[in-house]
Image (cartoon, rainbow, N blue to C red; front, side, top):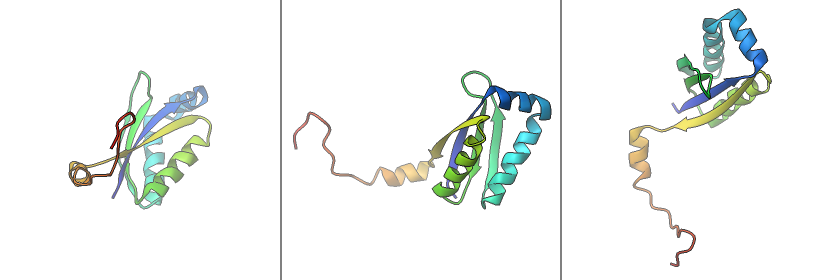
Length: 108
């Protein structure tokens, strides 16, 4: 099942709600959302610095990941960036594919 990293940033209103309900409540909500999409929550870690949380979810497909990110972001209290995660085996397979490509400034 494809894996996705969700990089989460809370707006001030979202941070206030997080302070009020706690981190475990947020983890439960995301776990329920991932399960409802036919996936699972692999990890949910809060952070400080430029990002507020890092979540890894296994979901059936990119459309499910997009639906989750759009739904969360539409709340306007959370901003989400989604990163598709690839396994080493997927990179091995990708390294065997050779597109016909010429970099800018070079001639064929």
